[in-house]
Image 1 (cartoon, rainbow, N blue to C red):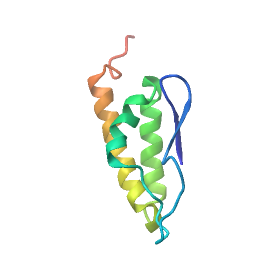
Image 2: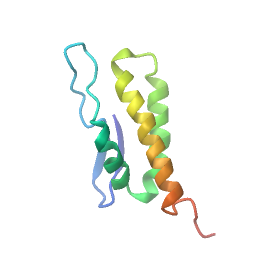
Image 3: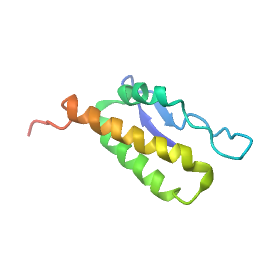
Length: 94
């Protein structure tokens, strides 16, 4: 499970639960919720969260039960990168 902070300072977890289906696969979050999840992350937490998503995917790449969640981790990382590029998170004054 990957943790970050939302805009109000509360913890957010991805995936939100470790529930498994009948085949023993971890149930991923609905795809339509990923954009909302990315939008709720505190701006100063975007880059650390992206790093944790990618590291988590790398560590669990050979575990079949994480396959769907790993795909979503990478999609969520992409959404976070796109958000950072469009909302000015990359432009910091010196």
